[in-house]
Amino acid sequence: MLVHERMSKNPITVAENTPINSALKLMRDKKVRRLPVLNDKGDLVGIVSERDLLYASPSPATSLSIHELHYLLSKITVREVMTKDVITVSEYTPLEEAARIMADNKIGGLPVMRNGKLIGIITESDLFKIFTEILGARDMGVRLSMLVPEQPGILAEITGAIAKLGGNIISLGTFLGEDPTNRLITVKVTDVPEDRLVAEMKNLALEIVDARTCASCR
Image 1 (tube, helix red, strand yellow):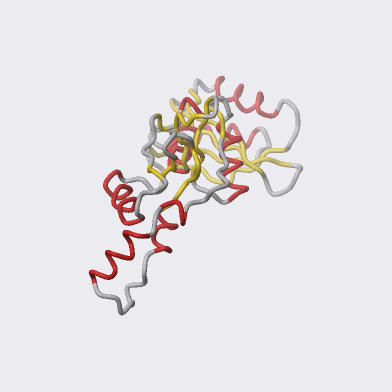
Image 2 (cartoon, rainbow, N blue to C red; image 1 turned 60 degrees about the horizontal axis):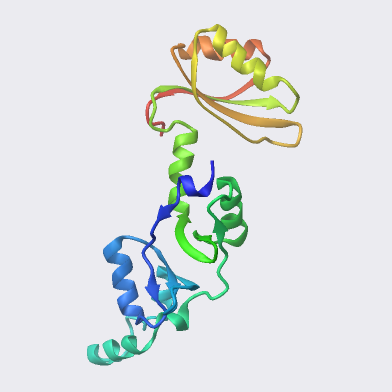
């Protein structure tokens, strides 16, 4: 899956000379937490987050009057508080690479560029939605987590055993295990009772970490 398949197209943007109080209002009206910043030529020159704007605002404990506050906020522009060295991705970046970039750089969103122009944005909220899809969070089924050895063919054994039981795999995810010798696999299966599925996996000498039957697992 690539970024263009899950990004928000035509993202809400803000001009670099916009007062921070106006930018904050725009974020709250549109229910977004970050805004790409464009110059008068439509080029991406920065990105500003809700946190950036709140940190730039006067403290509630300030002795300034309400009129002084409004005047001060009208003079501080997005240009003064935005992040200028923006990390971006292309529309053809794999989603897992976009997620890695966000995690490594501790950022919550990436502007998406095509030929130097902004065409979208991919955010942590988009990735959370994808995560729920990958693990079938909204689907009924038996959810099974297993610690399996890191060896060729083990995934084929698991899926083959489920198929023989008549089960339908609706989601499957692999995660780092306790050490390099194993992996944690989480699978959600329909059309097989939980006890039969658990018993079959134990027959493969797999360690069951968690088993439950659910639609929206909590």
